[in-house]
Image 1: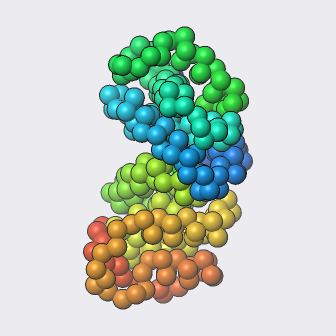
Image 2: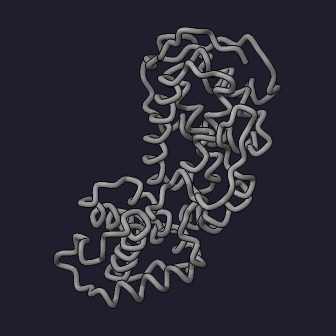
Length: 298
């Protein structure tokens, strides 16, 4: 069966709220640390230029090997395997380029087996490489062992629907806005994987922050309500959420400020201080907005 990033625990029972909206089981939040790189990995990458270079070259190879498969989720999953493997193996900076390429290709092969079961290693674009199927299979087994066979990765995509259900409780008339938020948060999450800064955050935190960032881009007037609802979620560490959100703000392209300095990040600071209703108004430069036919109530 094809693996979907949104449903990593597809065989587990779901929890439903009173409106029959599927929510992820509690175990999804409990197991997400098992699908992250080891805690020291981010700081090691920051302090070691050689290891960071290895990671960058390996990610580039993954993109190259998976390009013809035309599946962003497959590439994302392969990079997830790579980071978890590199953190568990404590790879030395002097790793030879051909070893990094073999690891990258093996991560793509494993990801392809999860995402597209009908694809074999022979279908991967490896022209000019010296690797045969037996070498790739041996490296796959090494990676599987290091990852403890946890291949159904829990990623930020696994939590988007859950947080969207919090933002749109009891409402059926915001399908366009809901779809737009999810689409923009999805695109943002794909792009964040290249930035090592976000390796230190839990997938659920990245998902929540990505939705908040998307709302600040396309429906700023509803941002206070959304941030209030998410910060009330017992699964979310509010300090980590604000730090992740601000990191997303920092990597956003800064445009000429046409409004006040009370931007969405200022609103978020106030929301996290009280997590209560407030009549906060915010303005943001050149942001796309989606208007809805009915006003929102938090």
